[in-house]
Image (cartoon, rainbow, N blue to C red; front, side):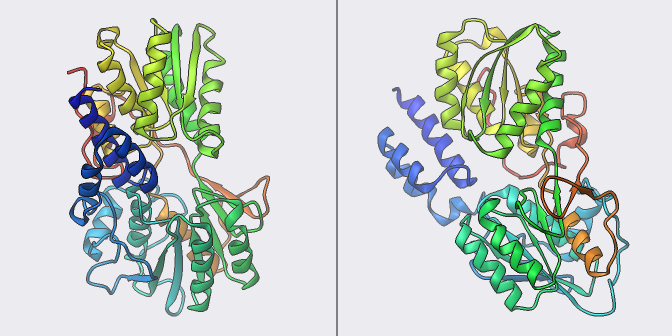
Length: 408
């Protein structure tokens, strides 16, 4: 392996770790194999981590409109109100007038999977933006540390603190079912965001990975004129988003028999496995027209592999998902042909749903579905392509920059 290639692989690993997309154990193991453990030590330094991660807050923190600056996001109330007006895409879902709600102070608990990834922090920011609109509402936020036991304990702590309702984004569906049942048994509303639990709850709010991925795949069918060979880089095999994104692609391709998926593999949502898979795909298939990736990081990894194999002249198109500002910039720059717009900005909807439940208001357009409780399905956001990238840059999540185009 050349020094340049080693440096590129180490840089990708460090970036994945700092953004919470790979574990410390895997980072150290891979860096040791590549002979770059010293770079890992630098990556773990606090000044590097601050560029990507939220503050390491381990106990519950309180956010309210009365605070000068909010925890986790470090934003002021005026900044959050501007963010609400200028960025949040679901303001018209379960709309609520600004001002006091009900007749006294309201304390909402927010149990987050973890603070280890900007996507999760942006969800908290959206929740804080809603709270900033209501002077009598406060938000108690806990960090689940991506640990089932810790998040279950967090819910116990929130109940002990006397919160009026809980909004939760579970680290794992079945593992957080007991926590949801405790909240319901306490007679308090519980609103689930992004990931569900398979038992009773007040409301589950989520976007559809199936229809989002179908929209991206339909953009791929159009770009390929219904003909060509495609390789698929999935998210973590067996995870519900990966299953649903593959299903959406397959639904779109059912109407395009001229497009063939010639290979697929588990890229685990991150860059390094995608590089290895794409290396193999390029050796096995001389005619690849497009890559359908379940995550932006996988797409950036696939592009690096294409450039290293001197296949840039083949004009392989990249279709991806995640909805970050870096991804939208990559669409504008021509690295991606389309990016599925899966937004973390749903925390405000969750807070509004909890406040409505506390006021005894029925959630409009809620649906019965396969689990107990109700589903509120958020509408799909537009697939981002070259035609609308300018309108969406700045409305995605994250403030990190995309990698440079390896094909120049």
